[in-house]
Length: 421
Image (tube, rainbow, N blue to C red; front, side, top):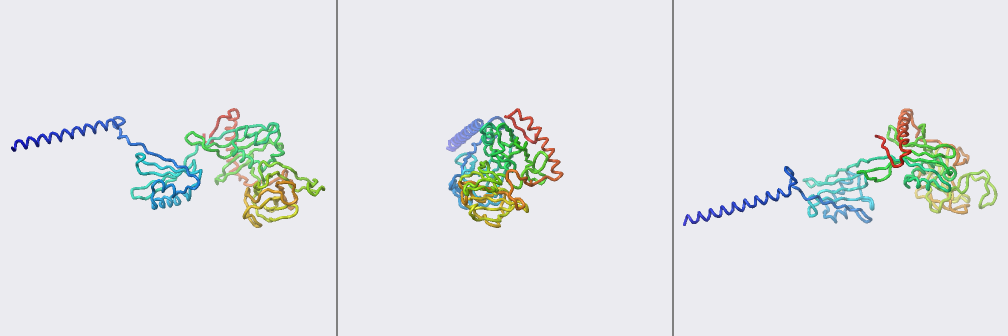
């Protein structure tokens, strides 16, 4: 009887050993299938990434809750984003959020990335202690400078000629802002004039993301070539300068509203369209539909804001001891612009209209120098942000390098260059 028991026990042990051997063989086979080759780690399931576009009505709390985060985590993530990344809210149609699940769609979320723009990402992870950590990352730009040139044809506006030359609308708007200090786009633009623009294109992973700054502008105006270079000084401030290193940005703009057509020029004798008799026209009239924003032509302080029979609603700004500007016939004033308000150049101070003695909506613009009205289109305006001697020397060296690179692109419209090449 004892022999039978031991015999059966031996069979059981042999059976168990056989099962273990079979299991071991299966494991070896499975490992062999999942390995990529000798010495490789076992392959893992690919991470699952979900990208959420922020739309109107979305909040960080709303989106996180939809993806299963509890209130404590939502509050912790919100707090670390504010403290470490300066993000206090999401912007509809601009921001994106990435959710990453390590190990596939059924795994928990292990990483959150906020994408507030093409050049910055904010990565959020939760450590072993359950604390959310934030790592802001600036994405390096691949900055390429491109050269575009064009010519004014019969019937052209500068905008039309610039568009034909392949210059993006946003860059053209920046060029208008620069040349408004020097040029009258109504009178200075003639058929046969040539112009060129050098501007930045920003790339990431060899794909264009957006346009950058205007670097060089050149225009063959009636009074000669107008050329400006963008230059960063030793203190990191940026300005625009002429080929000799003198400040190209004037303290006042000749044309406050970009691309506005002049309907009446400065004159000592003009027949008044309402009164019917001849008298001085002490400013320049620019056609502008009612409601067109009117920016301040320069930085200064508002010294008058009100209504009179001739000007209608008007604002007067004192810019320094010599210059004042006046803006008339406004439909309404901008909020928080009152007598004593300090305004920046380009700040909206009111909106075009037809109040006072006016036959239609427009902006009447005056420049007063030392108490006398002067022609905004011809008066010599003071430059600002001139270079000191050390910066001027650096500028001249930089300009020579830039000019050499531009020359190489004149006959290669599809090319580009980098200043660090």
